[in-house]
Image 1 (cartoon, rainbow, N blue to C red):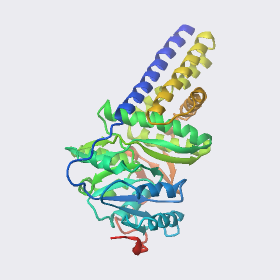
Image 2 (image 1 turned 180 degrees about the vertical axis):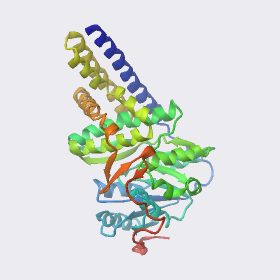
Image 3 (image 1 turned 120 degrees about the horizontal axis):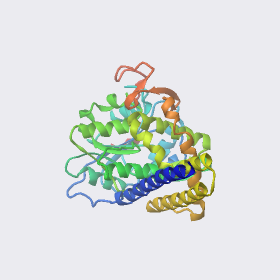
Image 4 (image 1 turned 30 degrees about the vertical axis):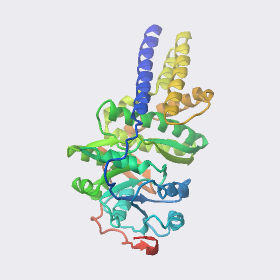
Length: 400
């Protein structure tokens, strides 16, 4: 019986390690920056939905006022004028009068998704036909926008998203989440896009044309879903347009997170993946080889399973180190055995939760999510009518 356990465990673990190595390879191959497109570059409206003063918010916003791009505007907004993010955005915008910008406070709703409601309100003030949707916790380098536009300019491309790595992560939770983002998330997006030809969009950075957005139903459609980014990508692909991933890595500034906070975030994303692709999410357990080898060691204690567990820890650490270094993250190699093991054990321990729970807390609200992350359990307001209509805050900053 013992040899059967060891044999099965070895096959499963090797398969999991191989899949992780393949994801790391795909991520490395994905990181190709395109040359600028020929001719005049189209002007871009950057939509920045804000809520709360995130870690490093001022520096994050500052990076969007220093883009090496000839013509763009930045529209920053909150749902409530009392939101502390507004004061931060005001200071950053005032320091860069050379970049057209506008501050908006508007609480109108087109659906249940609070981020999309914010985006819908910001879009009302956007001047240009190319829209960049970018989260507040993203920090970029000057060439970022030009590379996105270069991808969007390729024939048949309807949407471009960006790969991202974790930055400024602190605390136990932040450290573990950073490793997960730099390996599983970055590698998974690249593998699905590059190896399987699928659509996988992370909404931290999305560039598309206004006409494309309107053709899929606009923000009113996307506001019905929690995973509005993935739904947007799927709807764009459904209309015969390609969904591309830029080769320009951006930084996702995490800040200091407790283990409890990190697990909460992980479970929210896990519930999303479970609803978007039940079979795909079920297979994610195989991507936690240390957790599986640990189960084998507990089920059948002995030298063989102990050696299997030790070899798995070493191999997992090596794969993670290679994956992170491919995106410019360099930790001391000695930390990986402990860090990779802790991440696998935490992720494996909570893997089953999304199968029995479909409720998420996000942006101060609690949602139940249905198939394709449809938000349920509350009344959806009429498009454009709910909430308090806002006006641009301090129009003198607009720069138009």
